[in-house]
Image 1: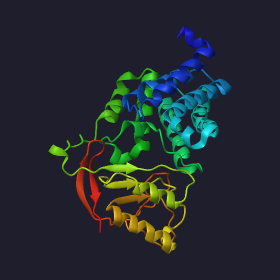
Image 2: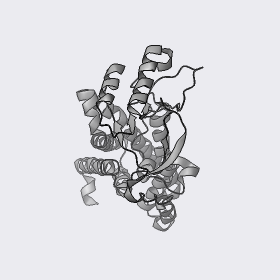
Image 3: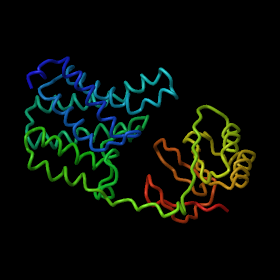
Length: 312
């Protein structure tokens, strides 16, 4: 611990912990690394206050978001640095509140409870209340489905993880084992793929920014004939397409012509429901469907049992 007395060393270790944290998410998906990464951050924040604590949290955030979301550079260019700084502010605020809690005398289990609530609060603000509504790269998301997920969701799973780690960091190892083990019990194993690939779908995804509907239509037509399911991004059609008869007709003609299921993002009028649509408050690539919602089951090696939409 003597080396941790050096603040530059702490800064380097905060960057390292942030990089390790990013490995829990695609393309690596090493879920278990959220435990050493977050434990490392909690250790580094011990006895650090004010600007030092905020700096450590900020560096952790810049490393984790910068590495885990590096692909955003291809969308925003150098401006992605601004986005990373905004996201890194949340770990910095977490660190600030941690330093205040220890300054006010919180210790042991009381501090562990505060740590879990502190992390969950900033995570919830970032994902649900902040205008960007950026829910990616949360500990509960990295952990994946467990038996707790249907009951407490990904935010609750994050609370359990942080509570277990805070207990362990502050010396309560025996108590920490229970929530740690609970967090690691999987919900259920995914079913194996059927023999011969029967029932599987061939899926294609298109990603463009600031282009017209015609670009999506034309590029979809260029896809191989064996494609069954196509997804466009969440902002592919930034208006209620069914209020535009021409575009709506072109879209449905494409689906019929290629015999595909198409899922894309659009905006819905308050009084205009969508056949197969799903309203949401976060950026996801599946907000509205131009096909019927009737389904038959199929199996995917990535996500287990899903549903295959049938075409009209």
